[in-house]
Image (cartoon, rainbow, N blue to C red; front, side):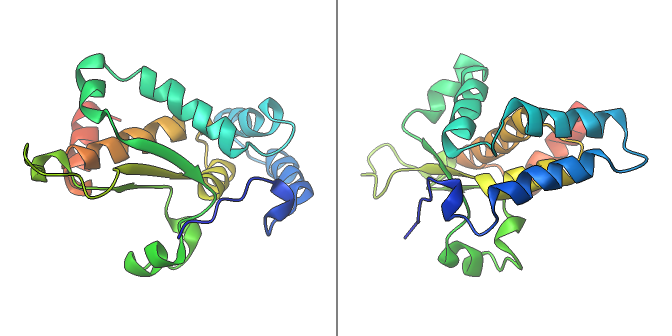
Length: 175
């Protein structure tokens, strides 16, 4: 069962701590301009930590930028933003922390589906809000770029690509 938390006040880390963490990180000596820009992107674009709706909007924008020839094969895959992976997912994936997973494709990849199969469940791409935000605060990556990257990665799993195959493709593309 996935629990959806809609209000920042329901989370275990107070909003003030998020804002303070951004402020402290942005003052760190030796920050590169990229890091300052990434922190600015997370902290200044949003006066409060980005909500599930904010990340859903970023994901929808990223999805629309995927070429139509690929996008048509992702029809029927739901994109859902939740704060963290559920306990069952954490145990199944042997995560040390729920912050270790940024996104997850849950479903049957296209290369394993048959035309006559009746779908047993809806294919879903989960984007995990809190780990995404934490990653942005700890790296030089902007939230928009990270959401796009994770979404495309999970769509790759929908197409049946393994993590290793996607890493090889990214290396070939020079990313």
